[in-house]
Image 1 (cartoon, rainbow, N blue to C red):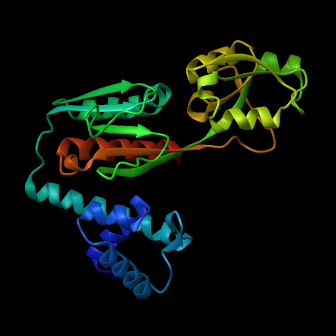
Image 2 (tube, helix red, strand yellow):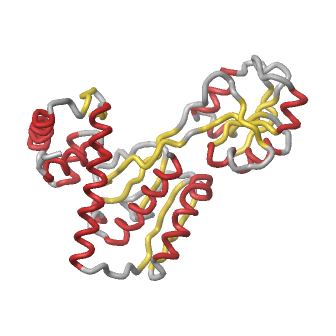
Length: 289
């Protein structure tokens, strides 16, 4: 690939932000300039990198392939800069906020490894369900399941979290095939979270099933399921790791959730944030592979 590195950085920013406007703000350039540079790069390569939609820029198949190469180039470039400048010891506090199950099962293992490699750093991992304000500095880095709409927040898609339907072995043997849900019990999120897509999905797929249990915690749901209380839609990172649970095929998997990482633009040059974010994104990509 003989493209100009500056153009590739613009491509990378658009791919991460999803819109020209957000990418332009992240790089401190004008939106028209970003658009011209993307078009010039596409002309140079000979194929479209993005599909333009009303909601923003979506990567084409060719764009996905280029993205992987550019990510590797960025990592190599960052490694060279660190080597030339002399890697400084990371120190200080970084506050990270997310929901409980994602912090427990996805971020905690990543941060444990990071902490061992960076003993001068302190990561404060706070799990909560409310939407944390980055503008008010309630956290430095937030992982959540919806995009950020604050113009001062820089965001990146961290991963796509997959879900599955699970049941305990003894329960499935007793209740039989799910069918339309007749004779089956469901464990779903409590009414405050009834708008979640997996709740509507499982009740639509199994209309005759009885809602036996509600809970506001995925880990509580998982343990109820393992105890034989019924079928539950769980994140694959939880359900696949619990002994005694079996994945149930209902003809299609439950809808997954995109996970977004966001931080205030004032922290974009923070070595602590960059190091923690890069470690988290690398670890989440490995877990999602």
